[in-house]
Image (cartoon, helix red, strand yellow):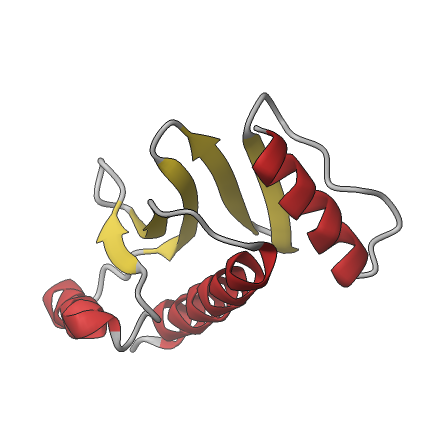
Length: 130
């Protein structure tokens, strides 16, 4: 996982963190964004994956909110090429993006920034949904 290790060191410096982000286990990093929002960045044989449980799925007018998630997924426009979904129990909104090609740090940083922005946006949408 040297590629991802190097990316995370660069990211730590870019974000001016006091300490370098260390892996939770080999090839798996957790990047906290807010109190109860963290991104999981992992690398496997098929590339780098970004995932997050971004919010509880609203229970009131659930079908309408799920329709909004589907529209957000349409052509990747509302998610910056990530994919919104639901956890296996249907209670959490998830966001995922997989990079299955060779990338340099600059592209990784840009994709990660888009992913973070999308996670925060959809989290706010879910929390403000009435």
